[in-house]
Structures are given as C-alpha cells and as structure tokens.
Length: 426
Figure 1 (tube, rainbow, N blue to C red):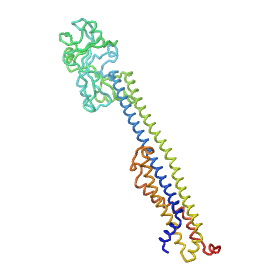
Figure 2 (figure 1 turned 90 degrees about the vertical axis):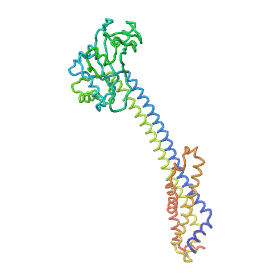
Figure 3 (figure 1 turned 120 degrees about the vertical axis):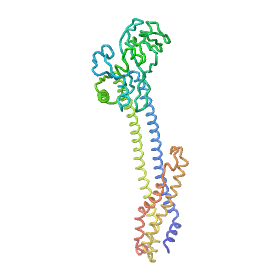
C-alpha cells in the first residue's frame, strides 16, 4: 500500500476525527487573523483620532499664538536705539534724544542679517513751540517702517505719514478745535489733518506727527534721526536684551539700546506659555494613544498564544484518540511488514493536511467576518489595510507546523507499537 493511499484511506475511515482537526485549526487561524485585524484597525483608528486632535490642537494653538502675537503688537515698539554718546538720563526725563545719528543706520540694519528685531521705524523727535498757535508740542517725524531685506515681510505696526499730512494727539486737536480735513500751518508750512487720536493720558496727547523728510527739513536736520524703534522677535530667549545688544552693536557700533521691559516680558511670557501648552497637550495625546495601544497589544499577546496552545491541544488529543482507536489495526499492519517510518510519516502528513485545510478555511472565515463586520468591528478599514499577504502565508505555514508538533508524540507512539504485544489480546 502506497503512502498516499494509506493517508487517504485513513482520512476516509476517520472522517469525524479529520473534520474535527480541520475545524480546530480553522477556528485557531481565523481567531489569530481576526485578533490581529482588530488590533490593527483599533490602532489605525486611535492614531487617526489622535492625529486629528493633534492637527486641531496645532491649528488652534497656531491661531492662538497668532492672536497673541497680534495683540502683543498692540503694546508697541519695545526696543529703542539711540545715538552714540546720548545721555540716557536725558532721554528718560524729556522722552527723546537730543543727539542725532544718520538715517542710513536704519537701512544698514534692514540690509543686514539681523534676526532679533523686526519692524524698524526711524524717527526724529523734538519738543518745540508751535509758533502759529503758541503751543508747546512734541513733534515726531516718521516714515513707513523699513522692511528687512531678508525674511517674510511684516505688517507694519504704524501707518506711514505721507506728504503734508499731520496726525494730532487728543489734547492738541481738542483744545485747538481741529478735526480731520482741516488745513493748518506749522512753521510756515501748510498741512492737512489726516487723523486725530483718542485720549491716551500720556505725552502722546500733545504730539504732532508729520512725515520724516518734512520734519528733517523744518528742523534743519536733513538725513538725520534721533532714534530707531523696533520690535524684538527673540521672545523665547532667557537673555533677550543681551542677545539683541550683541547683534545690534556688531552692526551699529556705539549706539545705545534700551528695552521697554514690561512689554517685552509680557510678550515673551505669553508666547512661551502658548508654545508650552501646545507641546504638553500634544505629548499627552500621543502618550495616551501609546498606552492604549500597549494595552491592546498586551491582550492580543495573551490571546494568540492561548489560541495556539488550544489548537495544538485539540489536534494532539484527536491524534491520540485516533491512535488509541486504531491500535489493533496498526499492530496488524506492522505484523504484515509495514515499516514504522511509513506509519509515522502517514500520521504526520495527515495532521499537515488537516492543518493546511483548516488554515485555508480559517482564512475564508476571516474574510467573511471582515466583510460582514467591517463597519461594526473594524472601523470601515479594508482588508488590504488590515492584513498583509505575508500574514496570510505565515498563517498557512504556521498551522501545519503546529499540527506537526502536536501530533508528533501520538504518531511516535503509533509507530513504536509492538505487533505481538497488541495482537496477543485478540
């Protein structure tokens, strides 16, 4: 009798045993694949949810940071650059520098690779009498902000004053009865009131703003300014002003730099806190997703070995029962001269056949469950997203290997049966 015929006869003679073996393998294979697919779908879903939350948080924090940055701009310029040799006590007492420096300094800064400040604004400020009205005022000549030659253009903090326009503080336009559109004379030069400010409760209320070039001509200080205003952008640094001074001094040696600390500190703390909050929320979300994934993997890590052991136990038990039932037939075959190796191989190949058939049926069951439970249990992910071809091949080869291991001892027992010992009782 050939080996193939022996195996086929064995399967046909013990159909229930063979079917039960196939069923055990099919359940184990389907459970393995379904568990892995469920774990994969859960991880994909949680990762997608976390990523959506991360993206939403980043967008929210970016908007919040932009809002804070814009609101912090409302605090005004906080870096002031004054000429070399300027007595700062004089600046503090009268509010402006008496010395001047070349206007080209601001262009020198703009054309450098400076990174610690933005929004460069040259000014010429002087306290004097408005001769036509006999009023003591603070005259400020400004132009538009000088953009840096590198980096992204910034929206100006103040609008430029063009031509013969004039902007008046609250006390001046209120007391003089001036309004937007009125024509006035200042030092013999005719101006048009283009804007008036609300009350600010500071020296700004007695300030008149005009075009920088015009003010230079009126004050006989062509191409001269007495300060450069800027807004720092190095807000996250511990020694902000130290770094700013170091960078500016390398470009404009001798100039003096002071910082309006309260504004700078508020800006720095607001931005730093916003970034820290965003980073903490994102890190917390990712950690929660990681912990949840580890818990799921732990459960699956226990379930899959349990299913494998259960499958091997079932196959081994069925093989043992089969050998026990066939012990007299085995004794007869051995007494007729059949080799023990042939019997051993027959039992092992039968186990491989049942395991291979069971693994294929298990794969079919897996796809059936995946298709019908796609929306309910697998978050609508497709089979290609949840299982790879390599996993299916691994299942098809792993199950026969487990069946061989489980059947080895019963098959060895069958092959080592002594015919005389078995047949003497019959």
